[in-house]
Image (cartoon, rainbow, N blue to C red; front, side, top):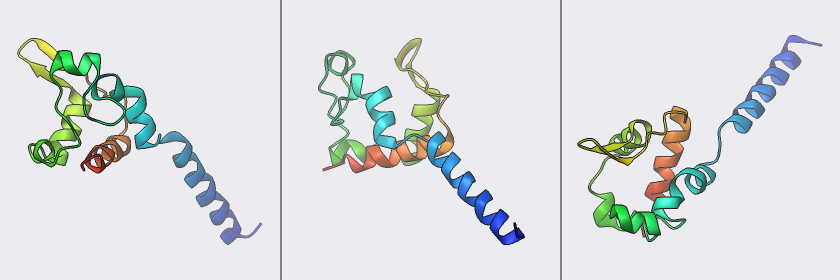
Length: 109
Protein backbone atom coordinates (compact mmCIF):
# COMPACT_ATOMS: atom_id res chain seq x y z
CA UNK A 1 0.00 0.00 0.00
CA UNK A 2 1.34 3.41 -0.90
CA UNK A 3 1.93 6.19 1.60
CA UNK A 4 -0.92 8.26 0.16
CA UNK A 5 -3.36 5.34 0.53
CA UNK A 6 -2.20 4.79 4.12
CA UNK A 7 -2.75 8.46 4.91
CA UNK A 8 -6.20 8.38 3.30
CA UNK A 9 -7.18 5.30 5.33
CA UNK A 10 -5.83 6.86 8.54
CA UNK A 11 -7.74 10.10 7.96
CA UNK A 12 -10.95 8.19 7.21
CA UNK A 13 -10.56 6.08 10.36
CA UNK A 14 -9.90 9.16 12.48
CA UNK A 15 -12.93 10.96 11.07
CA UNK A 16 -15.11 7.92 11.75
CA UNK A 17 -13.83 7.63 15.32
CA UNK A 18 -14.48 11.32 15.98
CA UNK A 19 -17.99 11.02 14.56
CA UNK A 20 -18.75 8.03 16.75
CA UNK A 21 -17.31 9.53 19.93
CA UNK A 22 -18.91 12.97 19.80
CA UNK A 23 -22.62 12.82 20.42
CA UNK A 24 -24.96 15.02 18.48
CA UNK A 25 -25.98 18.17 20.37
CA UNK A 26 -29.70 17.37 20.07
CA UNK A 27 -29.11 13.92 21.59
CA UNK A 28 -27.10 15.42 24.44
CA UNK A 29 -29.79 18.03 25.09
CA UNK A 30 -32.54 15.39 25.08
CA UNK A 31 -30.56 13.10 27.38
CA UNK A 32 -29.12 15.58 29.88
CA UNK A 33 -31.11 18.81 29.69
CA UNK A 34 -34.70 18.08 28.73
CA UNK A 35 -35.86 16.84 32.15
CA UNK A 36 -35.64 20.44 33.39
CA UNK A 37 -35.48 22.54 30.22
CA UNK A 38 -38.00 20.50 28.20
CA UNK A 39 -37.45 19.10 24.73
CA UNK A 40 -38.33 22.51 23.28
CA UNK A 41 -36.14 24.51 25.70
CA UNK A 42 -39.06 26.40 27.23
CA UNK A 43 -38.50 25.03 30.76
CA UNK A 44 -42.16 24.03 30.92
CA UNK A 45 -41.58 20.82 32.88
CA UNK A 46 -42.34 19.85 36.46
CA UNK A 47 -38.70 20.36 37.45
CA UNK A 48 -38.37 23.45 35.25
CA UNK A 49 -41.30 25.10 36.99
CA UNK A 50 -39.96 24.13 40.42
CA UNK A 51 -36.56 25.68 39.62
CA UNK A 52 -38.10 28.63 37.73
CA UNK A 53 -36.05 27.85 34.65
CA UNK A 54 -36.04 30.51 31.97
CA UNK A 55 -37.25 29.97 28.41
CA UNK A 56 -34.33 29.34 26.02
CA UNK A 57 -36.58 30.17 23.06
CA UNK A 58 -36.85 33.87 23.91
CA UNK A 59 -34.39 36.36 22.49
CA UNK A 60 -34.65 38.35 25.74
CA UNK A 61 -33.34 35.48 27.86
CA UNK A 62 -30.72 34.42 25.33
CA UNK A 63 -29.40 37.98 25.42
CA UNK A 64 -28.58 37.64 29.13
CA UNK A 65 -25.63 35.28 28.66
CA UNK A 66 -22.66 34.74 26.37
CA UNK A 67 -21.64 31.47 24.77
CA UNK A 68 -18.69 31.36 27.16
CA UNK A 69 -21.02 31.74 30.16
CA UNK A 70 -23.32 29.02 28.82
CA UNK A 71 -20.37 26.65 28.29
CA UNK A 72 -19.12 27.38 31.80
CA UNK A 73 -22.58 26.72 33.27
CA UNK A 74 -22.74 23.37 31.47
CA UNK A 75 -19.23 22.30 32.47
CA UNK A 76 -19.22 23.67 36.05
CA UNK A 77 -22.92 23.72 36.92
CA UNK A 78 -24.83 26.57 38.52
CA UNK A 79 -24.99 27.25 42.24
CA UNK A 80 -27.01 29.72 44.26
CA UNK A 81 -25.02 29.89 47.48
CA UNK A 82 -24.88 26.30 48.73
CA UNK A 83 -27.86 25.26 46.59
CA UNK A 84 -27.11 23.51 43.30
CA UNK A 85 -29.45 24.88 40.61
CA UNK A 86 -27.87 22.83 37.81
CA UNK A 87 -25.41 20.00 38.15
CA UNK A 88 -22.09 20.09 36.32
CA UNK A 89 -21.71 18.07 33.13
CA UNK A 90 -17.92 17.89 33.25
CA UNK A 91 -17.97 14.53 31.47
CA UNK A 92 -18.81 16.26 28.17
CA UNK A 93 -15.95 17.14 25.84
CA UNK A 94 -15.27 20.75 24.86
CA UNK A 95 -16.57 19.94 21.36
CA UNK A 96 -19.79 18.49 22.79
CA UNK A 97 -20.28 21.55 25.01
CA UNK A 98 -19.66 23.89 22.06
CA UNK A 99 -22.21 21.95 20.01
CA UNK A 100 -24.70 22.01 22.89
CA UNK A 101 -24.36 25.79 23.26
CA UNK A 102 -24.97 26.19 19.52
CA UNK A 103 -28.03 23.92 19.80
CA UNK A 104 -29.37 26.02 22.70
CA UNK A 105 -28.81 29.19 20.66
CA UNK A 106 -30.76 27.64 17.79
CA UNK A 107 -33.81 27.20 20.05
CA UNK A 108 -34.34 30.99 19.97
CA UNK A 109 -37.45 31.90 18.00
